[in-house]
Amino acid sequence: MSLHFGSLYWPGTYADPLKYRALEGCVRSRVAIIGGGMSGVTCGYVLAGSGIDAVLIEQGRIADGSTSANTGLLQFANDTMLSDFARTIGERDAASFYHACRQASEQLHAIAERLPRDVQFKRRRSLYYASTPADAPALRKEYEYWHRHGFSAEWWDGQRISRHYPFRKEAAILTNGDAEINPYLFVHALAEEANRLGLTIYEHTPMLSVQPADAGSGYIVQTPDGALQVDHVVYAVGYAPEQAGGRWIQAKLCRSYAIVTNPMPSLAEWPERCLLWETARSYLYARTTPDNRIVVGGLDENVRVPVITQRELRVHSMRLLSEFKLLFPMWEPEIRYEWCATFGESTDGLPWIGEDPDRPRQHYLLGYGGNGTIYSMLGADIIRDKLLGIDHPIASLVRPDRPVIVP
Image (cartoon, rainbow, N blue to C red; front, top):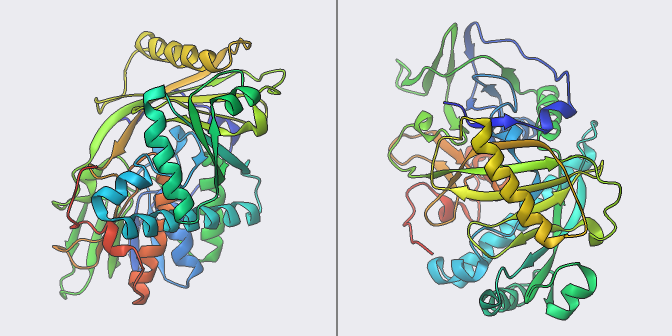
């Protein structure tokens, strides 16, 4: 099943990525990671950096699935507000989860800045604005939760917004600690570094089955031309949860849209090039690129399969462009790239990370949600700690068999 349709921007920024051979024969390792996207490669990097023997298999090419359609916003704030999490899982756990996401964001920033390859990483602030005046009270409540739990943010009223931007909104929160990145470059650079640290990577190696080993300890991961004999399996299979098996993952899979414009002569009216997003669900979001392009995404629909015709895609692309021009009416950006991609969320807004209670030593790393890259980093740490016998402070909040409470 295809995960995206249209013309993708990021793969064209790295024309000749490193290639990895397919698996042939039998290989022994402690851990098998299934999936070579953001989650799988991040996990492989963390495990290799901790001295844990691991092998990663990818059915196609590294970063060619959902990662190539990722729009590269690194925001630790969730699609589900902190104040909403406080209502469903309790304020203490909600704050702990948000702080863990903030820490994961800082880890990603540190990794991106020390990678030998330029991955177009830029620290940014985010402007989270009220889509309608009726959303302002809930946004104010969210700001108060942020302030109470020590997150860096500023409250902007309508006058302050209009002094800085060519649009007026009733209210906004200006948050610190976010960033933008080229996700395709980042995952390839991370894979290269993980490989140098000891992670073995195989491309064009789909998983056919996972069966208990004959000796009763560990698993055999069968592939077309070989097999992996491992103690642990990590499913980092993105928006194809069926590949992970088990009964715990009940994802809400939909489709989302994105456009990238031609380079703009100037973006002077966009202060600090802040990441922009709104309170509406589904929400519009926007960012810039180093060469002055504009990336706009959103318009999610409750349909799993991406559109299949250019005509249908163009209708949604023009809607995205029209919505963006309401914010910056003085500009006339032109669409250069446009795509539709499968996107996944959980019912309660939390990712699925951890060991399957029904299948010992089989682990999920499924970072569903708008900040899936943050979840990938968080999940890699949780799984690493599990393998090392360390209790991660928020592992219980994201475990596969947690009670699911809808916000």
